[in-house]
Length: 405
Image 1 (tube, rainbow, N blue to C red):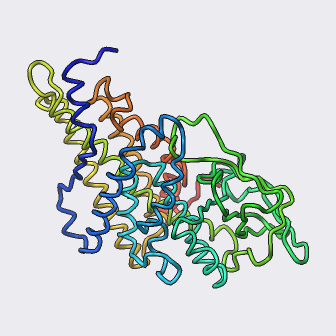
Image 2 (image 1 turned 30 degrees about the vertical axis):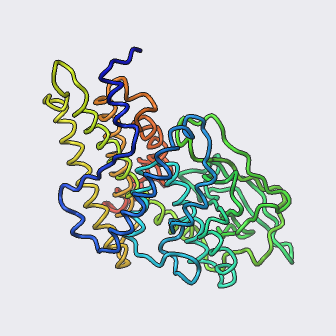
Image 3 (image 1 turned 60 degrees about the vertical axis):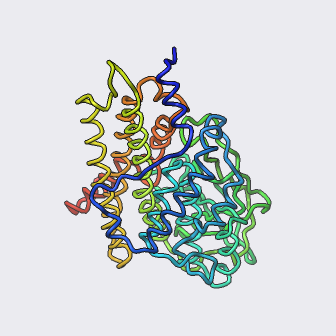
């Protein structure tokens, strides 16, 4: 594949992160000053800390472990957790904006942050004892500790109620057996919030710490997606878990489902960030790439692609903002969150594909973020509830008939 002089010039211009966020409907006017300050601070952080390194780490399929402490330093972990436990004490729109900006940098980096915040810190805060909150949350907030969330199993993904992982009461401790699959952060996690059935078949949450005998976290290799994120298994072979590590406030699948609602909400915002990055890159490239003696941005088909990208991003931005308002008011439902997650991830995938076409051959290279976003989003459209499962959640809400049972 030959590189023309004009392509080389475009590459030079794109060597720095000059991202400019689209805001066609002046949604900034709906945000408070604190929201915009937080958003802009994280955007600056992404440009400084993530953009310069992410392509190299993704190419090597390596997790940038040093980012964990950096995320802690900027307050990206547990931003909605009260400050007395090390969190940020922020509202849901602030959380969403943080996820948007981090995923604009990379979906894998956002996965690391949202797992820590929504799937580890949130259940410890919402369902844990005061002792558990004070023991774990400050270290998780600072990035001193990294956590993961164990729900999915090899044979039970969309149907978590069928999980086989279980524990028995052994008097002074619990004995945990089973395994979990597709677990973000697990190979480096210091602790795992694990969902397992007790002798009565009730789903409970347990905090399992690295170093407990019989607990291992093998890494999953050869991923084409989320290559800068680390993914693994959780294996429990007669793990003795102290009774103090049971989350007392969680009983049944309601607990992990509440965690997933929080994570899906963050994903809805995050996908907008990935879409914005693809759109911004495509717009810049189209203005600089010369064919037939003019920028390709001057051709009708390219303008059609850009106009449709901006339209879909704007709709998704408004969807996120309204959902954030509802979540702040305690009114956001699971079905509303499913609608936003499903719509926004599909939107981002479509935009990544159209942006790749605008970039032509250059779009498949690591000189631009397009293929990395596209491959990452193929995981995002599946995890935390697949595209089709979210469709059925909405169908159930509309008709009252659960099609997945």
